[in-house]
Length: 257
Image (cartoon, rainbow, N blue to C red):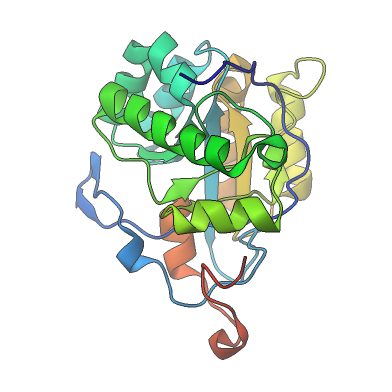
């Protein structure tokens, strides 16, 4: 079993990439994702940023579940799906919250097993993190997390990116960090104002399920997005809808690392 490393707030990601688009079987269920639907061409760094009308609000779950109810309540009130990156430790500690996320039809990704800095791990430890996380997530949610993966702290390099890609995962980064879990806890007004000041169409954003304040900020954020005629989508849908300016100049998911 892997040693547990306490998960904390994120720094800026070293490399950001994204997954693929799900199709909806019904309004309450996101179709499971497969690597086969990932576009053949991806840039080395993908923060979303595109022309369009979509934004992907995503959530990391690694420390506690105090914000789950508020977050899901706002998503469901607005009829939105979002992407949740779960650690294996979170799934073992909060199985009820994980089931609630899955039963609400949210897209599920992996955030490692115990939230370590991946660049400090050996190759074998990286693969163990992925394997044990996948098992814990599937037991808690019934969903397979691959191919969506987010590095803890955004900590990755050429070696770890290659290992993750070969294991069948697509790393996911973010263009806008809400800072909800960074240092002192933020108020809902701070989080909503940060989105209003910095959010751009096509962004992948980062929030944390440990922060109820983020859930309380979502109503104002979604209302503001609506004023700009932007749609909330999953990370997978955002990638599938992304318009590459010249796909022949992009590298494949594996060769990019």
